[in-house]
Amino acid sequence: MKTKEISRPGKINKPRVNVVTLGCSKNTYDSEVLMGQLKGNLFDVVHESEQVRSDDIIVINTCGFIDNAKQESIDTILQYSELKEQGKVGKVIVTGCLSERYKPELEAEITNVDAYFGTNDLQNLLSTLGANYRHELIGERLLTTPSHFAYFKIAEGCNRPCSFCAIPLMRGKHVTKPIEELVKEAQYLARNGTKELILIAQDLTYYGLDLYGKRNLDDLLRRLSDVNGIEWIRLQYAYPSGFPMEILDVMNERENICKYLDMPLQHISDNMLKSMRRGITRQKTIDLVNAIRDKVPGMAIRTTLITGYPGETEQDFEQMQQWVEETRFDRLGCFTYSHEEKTHAHSLVDDVADQVKQKRADAIMEIQQGISFEKNQEKISQTYKVLIDKKDGGYFVGRTEFDSPEVDNEVLIDAGKHYATVGSFVNVKIDSAEDFDLYGQIVK
Image 1 (cartoon, rainbow, N blue to C red):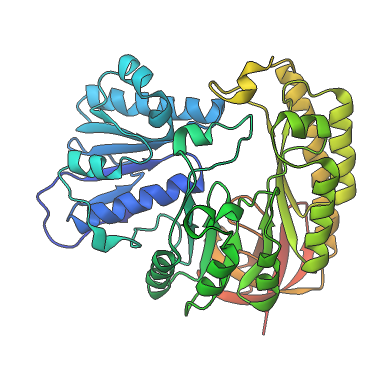
Image 2 (cartoon, rainbow, N blue to C red):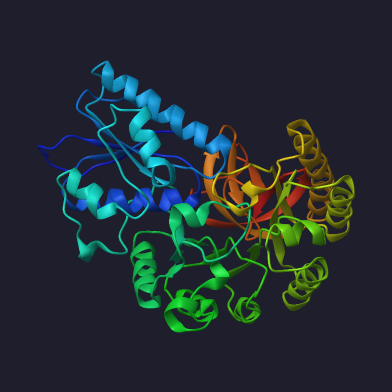
């Protein structure tokens, strides 16, 4: 990632804080809040600067979700610990999910880290750095994404009992953020040029139950939709069981709410869904997807699936394959099962060989590649509103309302023939398409 310098003008007699972010968009959000607080305390702050200084304080925001993410976090801690040993950085502080979940083990194994903090230790982390938590800065943060879009966390934690997931161990129970606080944050972002809010939480659809006594995502969406300057609102991480259908009415009412839904379904076999403790059956899943598509014509549904969960038979997997072929999701990601300590599924035998897990995941993605190609071919000659994210080589690169950054399709526009401003919306007529990319030209 390119260095993003975020500093306060004027001389500051404090060491620089270099924040390194690993993992998901929720960690990105947490890092941005931390950086906003540090700036408010007159610290010089950079994000993932490769030009380290000998007095730098390195804050590593870790991920502890699955094996690969945990290993990346450990490797990063070791990398900066070694730089500290060599006198190339000043201090190393670790925060986030990995240290929430494995703090005693980390303290015993990597002893030259100056301090370890968990996911809800922001005030203590700031105190260790010599900063005060400033309540007046609630809602203000320093974006590490391009300023025209921002991840927007509406709740923390999760109350779902999914057998394979360690998130509740690291993030705690679901806690809804009040609507007024979120509206204030959205207004702040909009004033500073943000045009797209990407709503995130472990479970968007649980929003409000703990605070308002009812699912309240529809009310939040209406309030955010009214914020001047916000042109797109995108929903990620919706849980299928107990899905609040009323949010689909809001999508139809409001033009600035994208017809896009990220809903991780994980599997379709009843055997797997029951063991995964998903609270939904195969038929209810199929009915829900059909109902969403009927209610919001043109809706783009993104899902994620798991292969190789304990006990997954060839028959279970074949059911998944057939369902993916029949359902024709607009976007899909597939992951191999990771056997996580202290989860309910850890008591099961991890009996699907790693190579079989991967072979099955590859087979699902091959099916999806074909579906994506066919769906993209249908977009040729159509014109779409596109948000320009960046200029890359000879192309301006953007997205339609049906695509989230980094994980979904992109629209490429020949920069030799057209000009666009990063962060602007343009109308693009699609003239060719590949598996996951669209090519087009700007039209009036």
